Amino acid sequence: MATDLRISRPEPAVQVRLTAGRGRSRRIRSALAHFGVFGAPGLLVYGCFVLAPVLLSLWYSLTNYNPFNPHTRFVGLDNYTMLLHDDEFLTSLRVTVVLTLILVIVPNLAGLGIAMLLNRKGWFYNAWRGVFFVPVVLSSVVVSIVWTRLLADDGVVNQVLGWFGMSPVGWLSDPSLALYSLAGIMAWQMLGFCVVVYLAGLQSVPDELYEAASLDGAGALARFRHVTWPLLAPALTINTVVLLITAFKAYDHIQVITNGGPGTGTTATVAFVILQTGFVANHQGYAAAMAIVMLVLVATAAAVIMRLLQRREVDL
Image: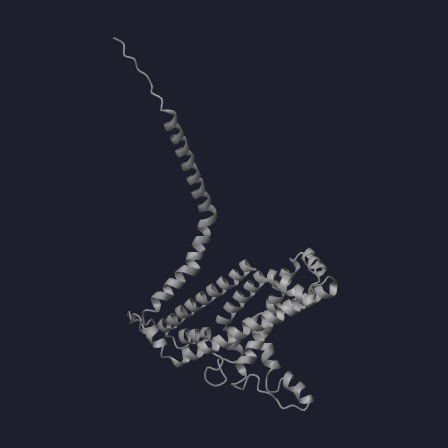
């Protein structure tokens, strides 16, 4: 007796699910392939040069690590406890806060004013834009050496003051002035960056908005308040965050110009103290704890400022 063999076909709904499943699998494989080609190298670089050093520093901060003392032991939070009573570190925090306030406020205000003056067409204004941006591309060491010569007790600035019968000023030798002189030098170097960012923001403002405001009877101040300033909110965010990070990691200028002086720690920032502690005193476990604290402070401050400024962008 013959047997009736029939190949059963799946129901239409089942067939649709199988087809969808195969399509989803192909999309997943394609996404993984693209990630392996484009995303994995970036993550590998980030992990090797950012994440791994941070985790290693975190581990060192919990030890008494010293490269010249092989007897490294786990000390827990002792390094962080010591920071609360370390006058040198607390002084460096105060110095860093003062430097940060000056470096965030002065280039922002001056850069906005200069950008508005240079927001015109013509070779003259293009040339001046280049002049203001030159200090940004110069090495901080070169800038520091030049300003050290200019602000020395017998430097050019004091010689010019002498022509007007004024006494020499200890710009870098007076403990009460050194930090402000240092902040002024750094602000001068970062001024061109702020000018360029604000110029980009100004040139993106449509002329139609100014024309409409003028037709409504708005003067120059009203046009700036209601048209220009709201549309410069993204530029303000960029400048503020970049200047904040620049101030917190300031080291080159301090090392070349004042070496943390004059006196004891009058211009020593947190970054300067960290490097001195880690690579001069060789207390790298303790220096790692300082670095972790600074990382938390910078990340928190940058996150808060970006949150506030970006909320302002939305509100405007």
